[in-house]
Length: 243
Image (tube, rainbow, N blue to C red; front, side):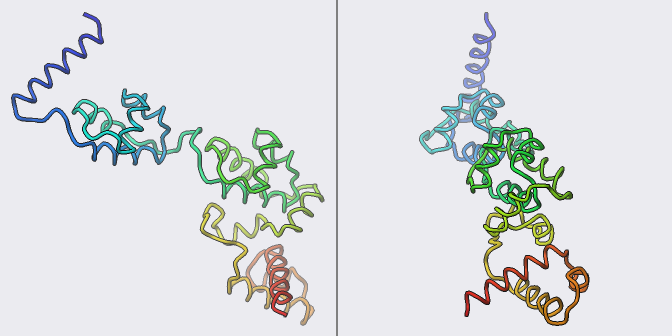
């Protein structure tokens, strides 16, 4: 008897025993569907399939509600899979955080090829992110985050990268350090907010009216100098738009 035959024999005996004890062998898939939804937050279909021993196609059918009953063995296989703590590398995610990291590094003077080298990827991928790519694989996001850790504390040498970032109003590293919401897609850095307006107003008062240095003004207001400069620029644009 082969291993497959033995498994079939065991499953058959289990079903017979369940019937004898009044335990149904076929169940509503609600519990399994909910567990699949949980697993899909961090795991690919292929990984869930390998962990459960069920085909990815059948798992998709269960998740989509195309299956009305499943046998108890399938139910137990699915429920036995433990959700992964970290997302699979091939998992598609929102690219907001990576887009902001690339743009912030460019605002700091890092050329796209420098960022690509630090991330171990191609310049084309960095260019796509700088252009606002919406979805990406987790493995690339991990590489971008690693490059950000390597480069965010140092100034780059690319004037062109700085000019592009400045012309397009991209927030720099210091801005994201201050607001601490770089991975939050619901946060709009371009929306008017009282904090930036107050900071810009106070910065103009100290630097342009009272004549203090930008360094002193930033220390007085408790922010980095580049953050203050950016707040002043944004506040001036708001004033011009309102005029």
